[in-house]
Length: 183
Image (cartoon, rainbow, N blue to C red; front, side):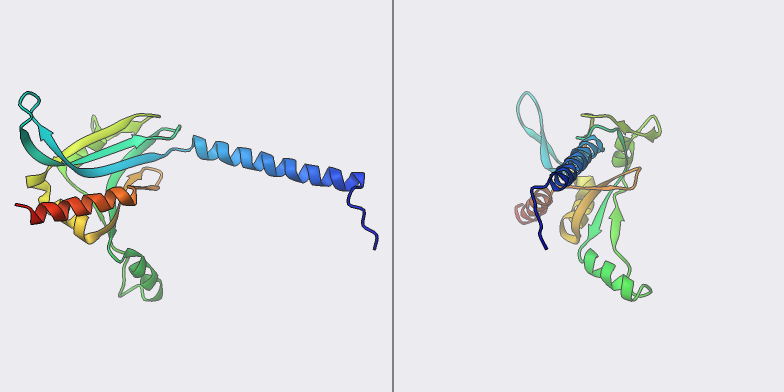
């Protein structure tokens, strides 16, 4: 068996293999760059009076930004309850007893912020939605999110979930727990 690697046929086949791989890689990067992508932030904030810098109220701050090139329509905000993955796995074994556990945030402020003139809001590249939920009215909602949740998402109309970064979610949980301890 005499194999000569540097024959012309072998070099042409190898170079065409690398050219095909490079073209696949470039097309995949182009696809990823052009897809819609939402950046989602949730956290506790304070609204202050501009002249005296006196704290007016504590709020939950939501910010949703379309960081991708394609326009997206935000449909809902929700998340997974703790032990979601375990329940999802167990529901495959025994679907009658175990169900995946999740929640959808439903509030007039959230619904009015996600809708524009009664229709779902279209976010083009760089557009954003920001809104605040006052804490006295949303304190039980924040308690459910911060203590009973493992993650929080923004859902688009395509059906994809855009997750809030885990560091942001952990900071929200820690801030909430600290606000419950401090008077």
